[in-house]
Image 1 (cartoon, each protein chain N blue to C red):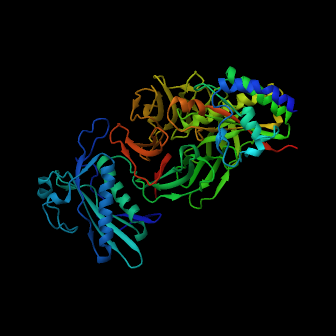
Image 2: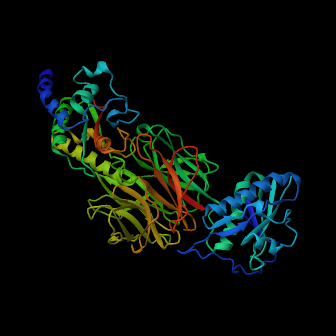
Image 3: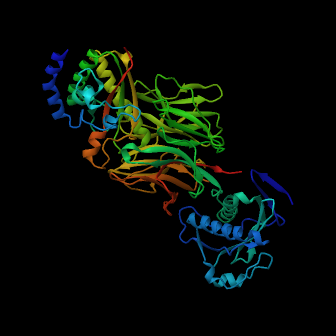
Length: 439
Length: 169
């Protein structure tokens, strides 16, 4: 057996890896998903008594992850025909067909007294009567049960949908507390599902719009720590931070990393005017990318690192523009009714998500990179600040309620506009930035 | 000195009428000053050269129309008075803070706040206040003065606040 180590987890092929992964059990998820795929996840089998609780927990997390994507529907255990489902026994397809389970995930979980956790699992296409791909084995620490579960769910999701994984990922965001006129803000990081929240800064200064790097190790954000808004770079592992070198003659804000993390693009204000700048992190040199008397802000790189997308009110209202990183004339791509801001390029490169204001309401939308095929995915009193899941399939954003007691919380929506879900967190939250799938 | 302020009082009354909310923010965060700037106490306010007098009697803020950063007539009147006082009291360092209402995206509102602060700074300089004493900053929509989600609150949140610190002697 070959094991590939990645961080705290190891993944390996458990059965001979020769079987096709392109069986008939595949959700085509372009625009037309009508019915979620039905699946059954019997409580995973524990190989040793100490693993029983963990096995139960992992199987529930796997099911919850799959359901949260909106592409799957769970067949509850009380409908199962077989009373005892073991990992070793051959799957009795008719039992699962009878309750209309299209997919079945079985697994066995073992632990060692040295804190080692191993999960072996298989995915079955019930109506074709075949195992989907090879069995897999994941190894990790008993301290990382949730991550292990997300990895299993990612494998199931990936094999059935053909989309990239996203469950085993982290999201950086701003955790908020206090009344609206004295709101306290601090940076925090959590698992994609809102679990495992950890704070990265205190709340003594206003912090805004954290942006996580493509390797998940660094965060750029804007803080008033010096008394004036400036850009800071934070190391996620140590929570150490430093201000990035921009002139004191103006204010720097709205930073984002390039995909290779060697450069950042940001807004710099001087004399009241905000333009887009590019900084090489190794040399700390900045180059100006736009010079117009308009508000140019919220820049974001394309995933190939060759272009940026940003918002500008040079036409008289907030609109979205793209331009080559090497320079050139910005090209306006948004032409609908309303104002467009905070554009973010999809990691797949095909779409740009944005915040749209029209008729006194805010919504999150997507358009192709040439501005065509605009679609709104959400609308409310105040939706803003989209961020993409690592597979470019899901968008998370902040929704703020109105009024004196208004507060923000995080929502996610599928790029089809289906499956709008609120994330459950203990405190108000805003400005999410979705990190990569962990290794 | 005292004579000048007596002479200003009729103008202050006018400015207060045409610029609701101007100069009467109140509270430690009133006028949008950040939490680290202590507001003047009541005793302080009776001294016409004090920060407290400036905040409460001269008036330290101006308001803007929706998505605007140009100064309207009421704001110019208020800033004429501010400029005169600031020139008469050269010991203060000045930070002009720009703010926006909640109807806008975070980044845009930050940039809009910069524009508003800059408009005030430029006007004060044009009226004779030394640019060396002035700095600007923006809080975007992060520090509203009023917290309802209606125009009556938004109108007070679209503001620029002139903050003083005793820096120069």
